[in-house]
Length: 440
Image (cartoon, rainbow, N blue to C red; front, side, top):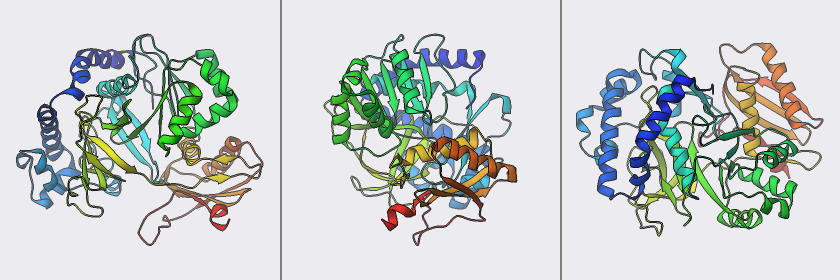
């Protein structure tokens, strides 16, 4: 993602300052007020999409619904869901609002656990909600203050490094050598840290127990990879601060995060979450598990309305001791991906491998529609790619060289261009496949 211009940063900072008081209080508001806010935002978004975005206009017409039919939150179930495949097929003209100035947009990439690459478009001067959500996330664990230093080990850098010097944020690439990550943390001495669980475990091994406790961290947020509460509690003991899990996606941004009571509170004023029966449009029974369908309430450039996320969970309205009234996500089950084991015994986690594919997009700048990483032996990896229109043969060689350099060990890497993805009998695609593990 590109950086915000000074003008864009000023606009977003002003909106953050104006909206922060209400945004801070809303998680504790009565449920009826929260639902009123959600319905208002949904009605605005659905009306806009039905009028200006061809994908939604055509789907609503085919389903026989119109924005005026959305009179309550329960009415949303009558509007059709949308899939990643449908958005990809409609993109760009059919999925974007008309008249967008490319110079005022920020485009991120989503592939996640599907291996199918999707551009996610935002208006750069309307990202205040993401800053507010970040403030809420870190404020769940401590009194987040303007001078607190925040470090995040992530795929790419956020559009802003600070809000004009306040709330400073430092980006550390996930693919950087662990020794470099440790050196940066020792130099920076952040108050707050966000990373993958696998990176946090590696940091604990690299730094040792004493250095971990002396790091002075107030709290750590982990995401993007599975971790158990027991693992997080053990890491909390090692680092001497709370370690909390968070659930987010590129399309819906912040969805839910643990409070200090370990409850996964939904960010209900950021994304509206429904639970539906898998492979159907029917709402799951109250309290039952089902597929997460989410609506990001704030993206009018590229709306995601009733977007099928693919993950499975249930939603609870039980009271939490923290006092927040936002509903909770329970029994979250995402896709479990393979990991690669190298001849040296080193493990490349699914998070690391997915970030390597982002390097193909951002560093090599290859036009990739979809991919699969296949480990054939401990020393050989095949990268299957469905090429985009701008993919050239030189990109294949560059990807092979980039992956070898990232691994840093002598392995064979070959890129194979394919016409379509291989899928399971259930129609699912696994973007990371280790034949070594399966034969072991």
